[in-house]
Image (cartoon, rainbow, N blue to C red; front, side):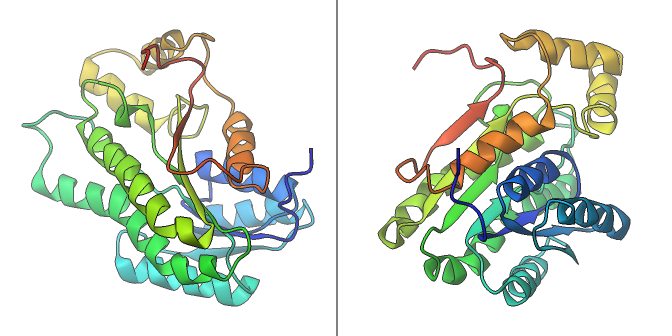
Length: 263
């Protein structure tokens, strides 16, 4: 199926690895040009090099998304180099495991700026460019902790719920410009984080092993496994494509059947 993404220009925050890079790959496979932003130079350059093998324009922009200035600079440099922006993928994130008493003020400020405010700042900076596009799209990556109770996930529950609220508000504001705004909530994905530090941190907080954490996450899905990164990337590509022209203000769970609630 031709998704109508060939020649479109996308920006992906936190795009050098994990789900962000999987989404960038999904877009590039459809012929979409991509600008990746992240803090680490080496991984950014490696990711950009891999995208270029798919015969699209790809650029890396070292960016600090924990500040409004960093988000603004990323958007403007991407727009200037690519010649405009049609698609915004918000994907910066990080987790501080803990409870109401253990998470510090410093942790909270850093988490909110990185996990939530970066989405707002990037979307704000990109809005004028999206209005010039004939197929403007915004897709924000959240997570299941924004819809379900996951003990120990205060830092991501609060910010993911905020992302879902932002998605509704922004979809309403940009609807008159025919710009769709959605969120995607992946389940547990076989990324560098879940195969390493994120699972390790959750294991430490729960007093179990990292393998046990991953086994618990897999068992919670109806499909009884973790997601492959490309499974998230392919759904994301559809959500920002011309084929998805009437879905907006929606949170799409790509979780292997984790969410067992009705209604």
